[in-house]
Image (cartoon, rainbow, N blue to C red; front, side, top):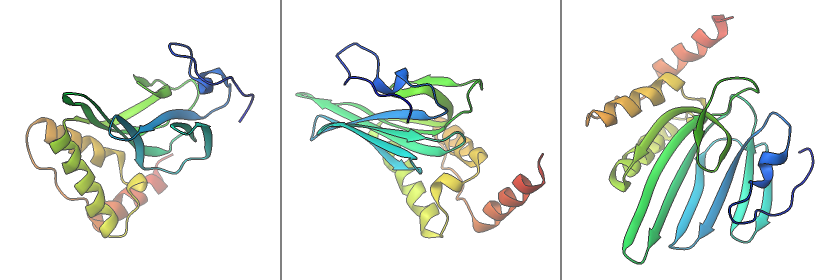
Length: 173
């Protein structure tokens, strides 16, 4: 990590926004039963602990990760969301996403706890057949997003699909 920054001041820039390397950074917060942001899958290259409630994970370009956000107030849940994101190369187009700097290619965006749970079960099913969720074809995550947006059940990801994806990736320039 190049350079360090002071801890984040409310409304100020995220410390990771001040660095000039190729990493995508995700700010995670955990305040039990209030704010719970976590990474479900994805291989972080670096972790910076800000304080006992916050840390920042850094991902190399082309790393795929799942970012889950849940928050509540005195009246109940106010956000439940999962985003599956591909970290981008410097100079590559990207979409912005809260707590992700600079942003990334959003492969899947699902809101509402029942749907988020469905995605988490889908991830579990993929891992149960021996495939790391971060190695899944980006097209499959888009498929899951589109099917769920249309209130349809997504198709299961199979070993055959995964092998075809890996072979296709080998022959593409």
